[in-house]
Image (tube, rainbow over all chains, first blue to last red; front, side):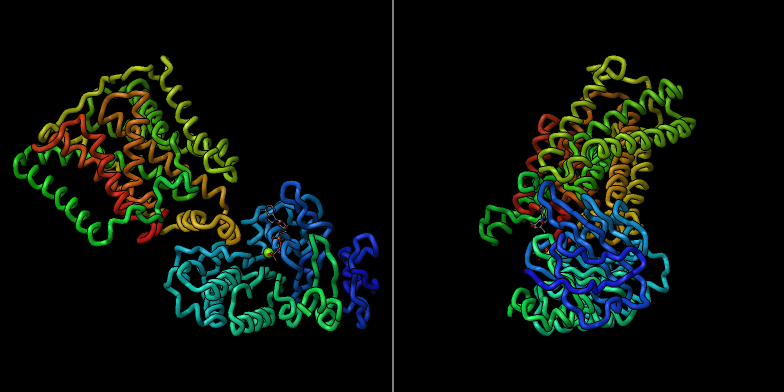
Amino acid sequence: MSHPIGTSADGPSGTAGPGVPAGDSGTATLTAPQPAGERGAGREVILELKDLNVSYGNIAAVKDLNLTVYEGEIVTLIGSNGAGKSTTLRTISGLLKPRSGDVVFKGRRINGIPGHDVVKLGICQSPEGRKIFQRMTVSENLDLGAFVRKDADGIARDRERVLELFPRLRERIDQKAGTMSGGEQQMLAVARALLGNPSLLLLDEPSMGLAPVLVDLIFETIETIRSQGTTVLLVEQNALAALEIADYAYVLESGHLNMQGPAAQMLADDSVAAAYLGG
Amino acid sequence: MTALAIGGTNRKAKIRLGPIVERVLGILILLFAVYWIVINAIDGPDQFVGSVLVGLQNGALYALVALGYTMVYGIIELINFAHGDLFMLASIVAANLMVNVLGVGDLTTATILPLIVALVVCMAFGAFVNVSAEFLAYRRLRTAPKLAPLMTAVGLSFVFRGIAQQDYINGSTQKNWPVNWGGPIIEGVYVYKLLLVLVVTIPLLLAMTYIVARTRRGKAMRAVAQDQDGARLMGINVNGTISFTFALGGALAGAAGVLYFLVQTQTYYDTGTQLGLIAFTAAVLGGIGNLTGAVVGGVAIGLVQALNEGGAHGLGSNWSQSLVFIILIVLMVFKPEGIFGRRTTEKV
Ligand SMILES: Nc1ncnc2c1ncn2[C@@H]1O[C@H](COP(=O)(O)OP(=O)(O)OP(=O)(O)O)[C@@H](O)[C@H]1O
Ligand SMILES: [Mg+2]
């Protein structure tokens, strides 16, 4: 990939924004017609990954990743299989420790904080493979989503809210989660993550294995979730659908950040389409 | 995992005799068991009553120890072979504490206070040792092949036995303690012994069921048992929850140690291996990972053993172990997941 290196669309964020190191990381930023600095104008940075490196033993899965998410955005992280997307999300959630680099959430360095405490900060994840509790009912799974919360009223309100987002779950409320269809389980995983009342929601391939109708539904729901005030970092194989709802996109390839830019620009870019949209 | 699935909670029997033949055979075996119990009751009612009482007393102890196996297996799928030996160490601690430190001799109502002290100390001891073993050994092996923690547990079992065998601990022979029971005796069973066992065991079993089924901690235990990463993403402290489970199991083994010492008035380094194996069998019989199953399995084995040894048509104590394992094998063939296997009830 050799794209013209444009102005960093990240702009001055005040918190030592990642900027795009020209050349050395090989990252291409799409030439944005909008003025530099417009992204996230007037908004706080909620999440920042700085020179993040994550390895499994000797295998480097994420290399020198810089990524910024502003409050209220839907940011998508796309890339082919094994690119390091899930690894990135797992690292943000504290399930993996970075080899080097930092995860900064709301101005606070959170790498090194154990996974179960990261949730308390307001980062919830619907993980790859769903990881729902198969032998518990839908209702019990939702309860566990609110495990760290003490505000009974808020929990009841959020429970009602997710059951409105996913009416199917209300029908299945006393069914054992493991006996539900894959799509229903996926809805449960998203709903469960929402019950933690996150300020940042991490979604790892929420459209995985869903029928086309349900894929549309889940992407609509993600937009609804954002409009209700939750920032979303979305990992997707379905790059087209992800770019359609996202504000900003990062493209990973073999652990490297390959490209970044406003989602709309990416959609319009032919080379992106050729490489990632099955064009 | 496959090698470990001794309790094979989810597997179907391999030998399919055809559903009808299988069901008929199963019913015949059950009928025979009922018949055996009934003729024991008819031909020797006094012996029968005595056997049931002894069976309850032993079964309650098996249940206490079985719970420790089943909870640890339920949460990290480890067969904690050292569990029985932890129970044995607790019985030695109880004996020395009660007799040498607190000066217990003849058991009277005045023994209640030392008994409470011993229960508290031994439960704390069991919890501490079990949590330490998890922290120092099993935790580091959590991502290792299942055989590694298993062998570690076997090794720890030998360490515990070795400690007990030291002359200044308990020695390599059975040690009899000068503790005397009084009170009424029914068919050779000291009523107070049985009462003591039941009065301590039943509340503990109820408390354990309550903790697992109703409390926040229990909810966390069940979540960790099903999906550790999933649990972590809910904000559950996975390591803390596993430690807590080991603490509960260890505390029950500690309580069982106190009761065993008081009932048998002796301590022996090999007790843990013998009783531990029976308790483990009880856990598998009931459906490993299932709390109710462990209790039902423990009491069932206690009753079968006692009837076999004391009933009118028993085969005698030489056959007790064989009988228990024959029952286990037959049950595994027909219902490999155990009486309350994972299919029907929730594990841990
Ligand atoms: N537990 C692990 N041990 C060793 N290597 C791993 C492990 N998990 C992932 N990897 C490797 O790390 C790399 C990145 O994996 P990751 O799961 O982050 O990819 P991904 O972008 O989410 O892919 P997909 O779209 O297929 O889910 C891959 O090469 C993978 O083989
Ligand atoms: Mg992935």
